[in-house]
Length: 101
Image (cartoon, rainbow, N blue to C red; front, side, top):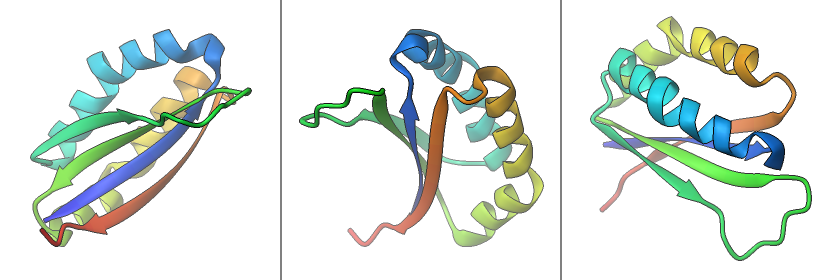
């Protein structure tokens, strides 16, 4: 089992709109097209940030072939939709983690 983790730094000015869009549109779409088992949204705490707020969205992936299919067939389009919606008001990076326990 794996976690596909996407970390976002969001401008304060769009935080509420971004969170609404993520919950209502983006996350459900990613879970569906990726055949992922679920997700969670985490907010970074304990760090003073002057230029925005940091969130991590984690998707539960059953196996690497499932993730590789998502990456090959859907990831580029998902990134494009995100960029169209919020332009330069966010930055993001992703990692894939293997769940050990």
